[in-house]
Length: 371
Image 1 (cartoon, rainbow, N blue to C red):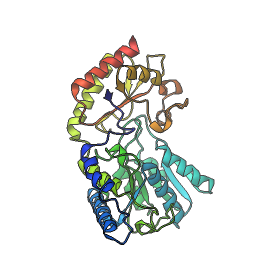
Image 2: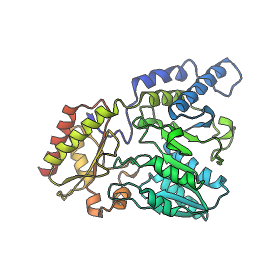
Image 3: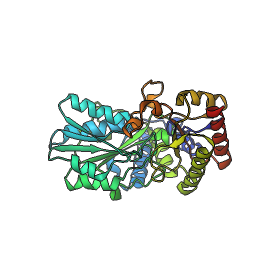
């Protein structure tokens, strides 16, 4: 099997599993318990928090472990909006993950005014577009670091800087950026950031929400008061250790993967008539390639079925929208018509995928689209 769907989920890394194993077996204590097994678990949890904070250039006390990117996004958007005294206006982009868009819609049902920013043909939010949308009562901006469907990297530092000039908190969904891009919050200027472990090589079910210490936010999960009351519930110690390990490891050398990506793009464009790259050609994630196939009457989903039969696993876009008859909201926001958007295919990979494998995939794609 050739697995090219890392944007949906990644295989669990051996180093991650080995780091987690003691806390799944011998050191299984509850970190809230006041005995030796609990103390061992508490030490591991605190150490994982410090390690995550180190990658983010943050304070350990600002890191909250949660169940994944969806919970992290929900908590950041709802929690900051509900706690902030500025007003009831929220800004998001049109190409956000559903966890962000639906959280903003939920706030809209509570009476918040939601502005959805347009993007250009590459899926990029222009800083001036955000500047024009900011108001005196804007209470939060949420714009992703990099897009899960087309790989476009947003100018986060510039966008966060505009929000900061107006005193507006800025959240970024960095789920896809983690492991590839610099996440140092001291230089990006963001107020809150969301991560998910299973995009990095951990088991599913662990994530991180980072919120700047001075930023108030309302917890969404109440109960036992764990994590200083920010997110109640017994912590997943093994998951936290695994996430810290995966975050430190990353996906490999970004430059090497970028060069492989670009060769793969060129090969597909040469071999597959009508294949058009979606997203920004250069400001995109290293291991992310996405196309629309403009000269085929077939849907992207049907092409993926044929590739799957040949042992190639890929996707048409977000796993959260798999099986839907609706075209990608990301591609339609970028100006693609419905029919073209439904021909989308996406290939996402890390440094374990070599040039020979990618060449094989390009040739198989050419056969299933033209044969």
